[in-house]
Image (cartoon, rainbow, N blue to C red):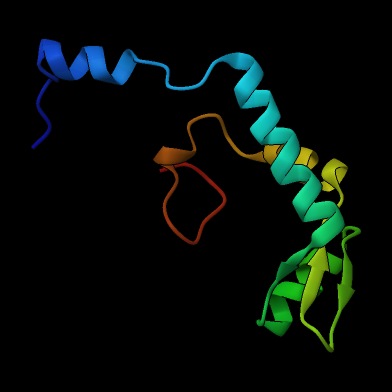
Length: 93
């Protein structure tokens, strides 16, 4: 059962730990890591799914380098209320 947050909890939820400039810096950083360093993915089907839309995949090392444009395009495709999605589906409840 969900209950409303207490005043203290609500205040903590509103607190912004990072400023907008810092959030942008973190965002740029992880986009750079995904694009230039890459990510180790040991599941062959996952590598194929990343390669099809444009990631650079090395099947021997299981390394995928994902262009920032692909990440941003994928993020735009996620429904705004993705928390309402059922696991394993692309639609809403």
